[in-house]
Amino acid sequence: MAIRILLVDDQPLFREGLATLLTIHDEIDVVGEANNGQEALDLAATLQPDVILMDVRMPVLDGVAATRLLTQKHPTIRVIMLTTFDDDEYVFEGLRAGAVGYLLKDVSSQKLIEAIKTAVNGQTFLQPSVAAKVVAEFTRLTNREPVPAAATPLNEPLSERELEILQILATGASNREIANELFITEGTVKNHVTNILGKLGVRDRTQAALKAKESGII
Image 1 (spheres, rainbow, N blue to C red):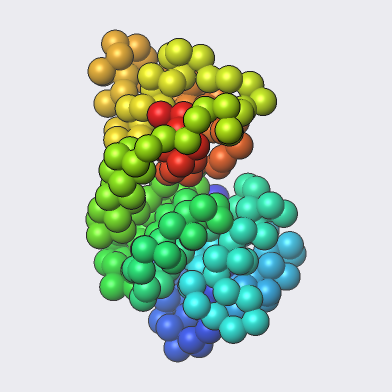
Image 2: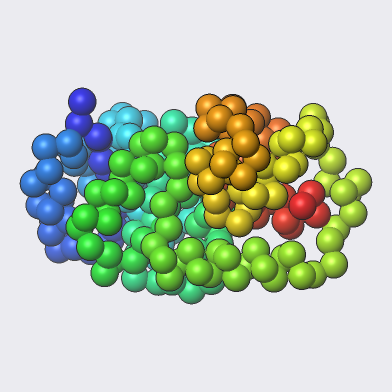
């Protein structure tokens, strides 16, 4: 079945062009368009898209606030931020709000389609320039004095193996790379990652790494 897409941007001309670009692909179905975050919330409830392409700065309700509400109300819908802004504040706020991707509007159509398919598969997709910011933030958090683990307790502690996988995951390694390093199967890694996300209360690998480093878990 085609991947159902909702476009959210306050520039009608951009939405129109993006919709035309996406509908060329048989595997994509643009099911709706919204002018702002509030309209996105209203349409998401009725259209139930698989992926929402969300701008950051919009009137009424911005993309970050809308993403935060969407991930709470519709956890199965994946949000990809698609914007002209690559400021650190927008990048990290968007990811913390629950976005599984962050792309700039100068991204190629091939990369955009790849990001959409990646999001549907439950994985994170970051444009290289954005990924570099995330890596830099990981480094900064790693180098600062950690918060005592007791300050951010988990309802269920991570096992030694889960901590080991989380540490490697935070470097940006894929499941295959983690499996090769630990001499275990990809399926085993995938199961551990699922458990890690559940225990940390996050939706994806990027959020897991951010939360773990901010809370001093790793």
